[in-house]
Image (tube, rainbow, N blue to C red; front, side):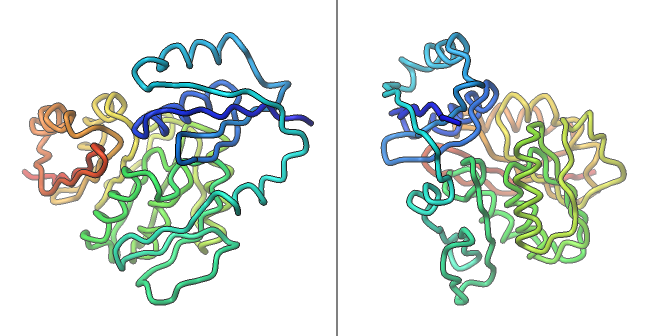
Length: 276
């Protein structure tokens, strides 16, 4: 069946936002390029009106331009192999696809066959979350990964010695892909489908990972605080540096104090600790 192909040029900081928006209207595959993203949808799943609405929403702010085409009989494995380069986060972890050569000089290695570009480590938010994970003791800890995407952060928690890892996402395609990546990395847990309220994780967690977006983080912050153990760590990303103050203002009254922050390409990441 033929795929519709859209080569979208945009500002770098809008790549992940556009991927998220388009994935909600029938697009099922994405490739990041030097100038933006290539987005693909089955002709039968494509809705022109919904697509036009998304593009119009970001056209000016993200400086969007696009080219449309038809791509028959896509060999996605070949496309990923051409466009997906491995990355290294310091000497902590080497993130690669199954067709890349292993690099044993790194402390850890994660195999991610992304299919969509959520959480491959290339985006600044995922990169910083992995780096922050390397600064937190996971040994024997109970970890919750909120909005897990490809499952890369859950896999990192497993490699760092977590005793149990729970993960979920609102997108059934991400759940399927995440579980495939769990199998590749010998992680026995299964990713669940739903929001944090729908999944309703029970008990307390030593570490909560949430790389989503500002609005979701603000909406769910109280739930994170309730699920986090005393002296537990909450790692957040998915928002801009100018949003840090808003996140802190929301977190502080809930007993969540800022421990560390970093930024990359104007994307921020925080470590918050639950205090009495």
